[in-house]
Amino acid sequence: MNAALNGETKSSNSQKLGAFLSKNRMGLLVFLCVLVVGVVAYAVAFSIHSSSVKKNLDVVEMIEFSLMKDAVELEESVIASRQETALSNLEPYLKKGGIVGARADMLAADIRMQRKEWDASRELWLSAAAKRKKTYLAPICNFNAAVCSEELGDAEAALEYYLLAAEDVGFAVRSRAYFEGGRLKETLGDFEGAASLYEQIASLEYSSDVWNDLAQTRLIALRTEGKIQ
Image 1 (tube, helix red, strand yellow):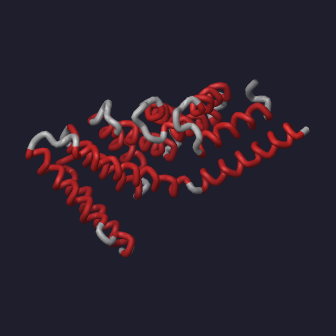
Image 2 (cartoon, helix red, strand yellow):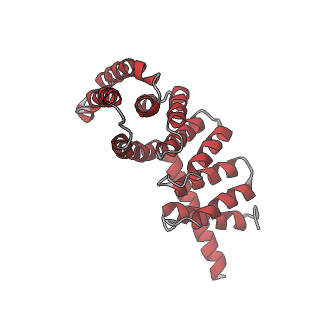
Image 3 (spheres, one colour):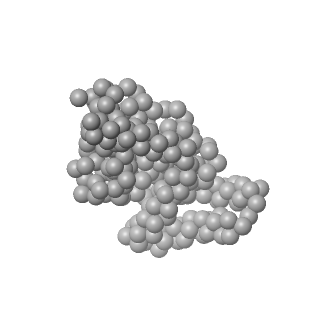
């Protein structure tokens, strides 16, 4: 009896948490933006191989500074104007490879994401990921490409990119990527596949986090609903 009640309670909590995450999706994107900013400085420190690269990176950083300076105090029309200027100034650097091109892609992708230009943003995130394969920037870019894909209604592509991020051992929030993948598997009707991804989270070294808790409640809900054994 108590076990059944506990299962129902956890299932109810899971539904509430799921509704909260869906309602606050754009707010949750702030986390990813902060993560991108945090790792870029580290990436830059280990990626400067020449004065030319440093010079180009300095230009990209200045573009970002001009975009972000006192942004919280500005009207939307001014922010929009700054974004247009930044995108125009970034154009020559988007064609470059390596860290310079990737950094330009990421900044442009972030701007496009803020403007809800999901298709253009996804293309830029994927371009950045391709330029920085086998680095910790790649899974961040793939995760953001997944977010854009969801906004475009492309669940299969979103699933592909979430799993690319989740399977990269250098990604700091693999648990969330696995959870998002499991959530999409559920929407696609693949409940066993969803359960497999939820169970992956518990095997991670940092599995004792909110995404593991959410995954466990979803597993309980799927079993209660008879969708998995």
